Image (cartoon, one colour):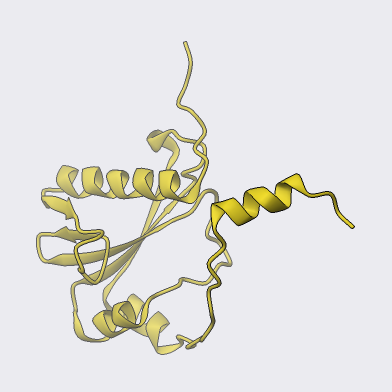
Length: 138
């Protein structure tokens, strides 16, 4: 008998975490839907809750929680905005995932300490990556 497969890649880890949250919400009487890619401010809508899912391959202990500007604004104005951190996702077995929920006054307290950062992302096409892999270091 084989167990669940170890997950690799950010998308697989995120998908597993979101699926876990959708099941969690349904199991707690709150029908939920995946709102990624719809322009919604967070990943899941659940019976009035707006939930941003933070997926962690292992532990989130000591890590910062990254929020987009609009998510920070949502946390400031929407009393039903939540952050759900799903840990230990990479190992692949939802029975061993850990869910941490931050909302209400706890979230407001944390968000008051938010630090705005500005950075640039530089697109790095797969073809250019592959070309570098084929080169020998000079």
